[in-house]
Image (cartoon, rainbow, N blue to C red):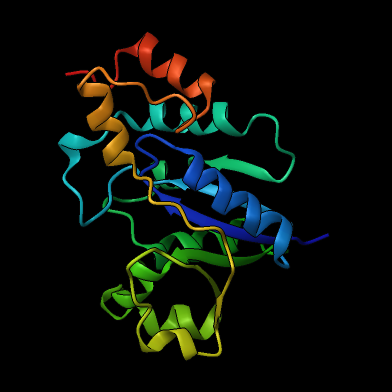
Length: 193
């Protein structure tokens, strides 16, 4: 029996409560059955040096969602050619899981620049996109596209960058990310230098 799977792409460097709230909202308040956190090995637009090891980032997602029955962590892009483009991942997932219906999850900020993506027109033709609002961002004209649905996901002004900076400065990040993730970061010495 096929499921509707929401694909939430990101570096998750580290995963935080903002990501978790978005994923949980999408899994419970939309037509999706599950949400998969697709951990990116390397975003074509980000430099590699600021990224924690991809297996550490995957493990932090697994630790953060271990109590959820509708959220999954996916390392699907780890084995695909680098840098990974969303269209290639979608085609690969469709071949591997032909019964599932895959839906993209993205923020308004990403939707605004979506036309620059590789094969954006094909993605819009073949896939639905669930958009979550981002404070101080405009979604642009694509928000009116029939493949795009804007959701009422709660908004949060929290970023992985802010968490990394706080850790570097020796400040508390309690409640910004689950305790299991904080323990893992401390044990591994991530982001502290």
